[in-house]
Length: 241
Image (cartoon, rainbow, N blue to C red; front, side, top):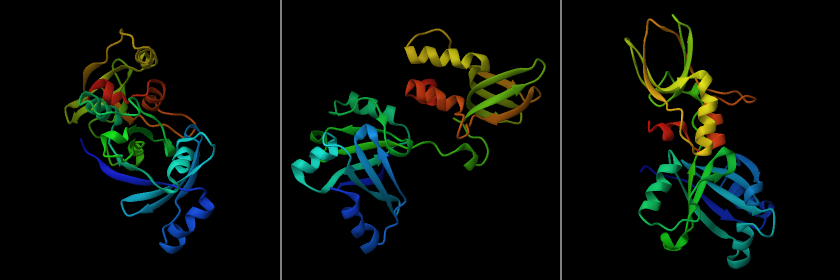
């Protein structure tokens, strides 16, 4: 299990009073401010090296941060560790009997997925786990194992979708299915049913017309993004890739 420090969350009564020390005295840049309605909090992000400070202002009286301020006053609210994929970590912690506030991830700021451990598991420190959105495929060079992709074939013409397992001069191996079956499979996983089973498929390079990374646009999510939004899981986790 690989974890790195992502940020330290600090509860403040309001950002107007809380920001000046960090942004003016310590000269940390405010990278953004976002309201997370589900948590009842407004968050200011200030990068500090490889991690960052996040100032948390409650937006309603019944929010966790508001309750924290009422009990303890302003100060460190939680420490967050970043993990590549959050579900396997939660499953591992659950199997070890670690007390958790969240047994399944929930939405966080900036499109993240988060979960909190119970403070009694950590010596009184509220620990958060965060999974950040994957780096956009266009920012990476080439194709790598585990990338969701589309494969267009000739003779006969077919369109396949899946997760890359291997690619070399002889051909491409994916775990996936016909493109037309993806929506039905997504619905099946969403309902926890059985039926369509992705297969490990090899296509010789002579049949491959083109390979495209499965990536969306601001207005149209990719198939893998849609799968995650509907099921709460990464296709890689479901396929064991």
